[in-house]
Image 1 (cartoon, helix red, strand yellow):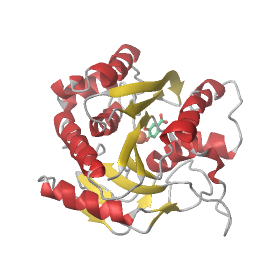
Image 2: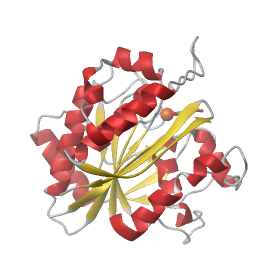
Image 3: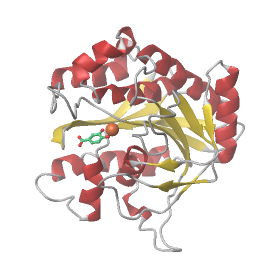
Length: 288
Ligand code: DHB
Ligand code: FE
């Protein structure tokens, strides 16, 4: 059976793509942010060594627009192209899909009564591409024939863009089911779960720029020692605490739930702000 090696949870901000494209990683504004990723990259390379990444993220109106908004969607394509809507990385190699795991996940999740949208064609935005570029910065440019990702991917999309959104409780249950399905995948592959979103931020309205460090740090701590902590809150309570876009922390919760009861913290980093966002990062090893 496949091995679930662990999880990485990280914030995403389109401006990161521009910073990478312009080589600004060592600039004073960016350095404290980019430096956070080096220990996670070392862990991935030396210990976790994933072959496949299940990327749990929220699409921002690119692949799904407001007229059709699935609550949960799983990609089952042979490949996924970056079509970021904003300050995206100008060029990125296409992502190669792990279709066998996609269909295995879809079967397992529908079998556990999750009503999914399955996507045999899908483009991905900054929430998907930037965490990948931060974890595998050497994947290289999409010059024909050059550059490739060292891992295959399965995208899992959670709607945090258009209300009503799935509850923290439901996202946790989805993550648990993803974890069970990955561990039951008949394969010798090593699988990492990546959760992309948050932490606290609000991009519009009267509270634009809102950041809640105390809440973020409490949430990060809970993932290590009390992973169901955030499931006590309604989405309105989470928005109150983390901001309208801070609700993207649901991706962290689903990714954490996939890892099972016990995890070992590998690394964590918190830097405020990057653009309008409190940028958090955690790596956790799964324990059996
Ligand atoms: C920002 C953060 C996001 O999560 C996002 O999707 C777009 C922009 C920001 O802080 O700029
Ligand atoms: Fe976002």
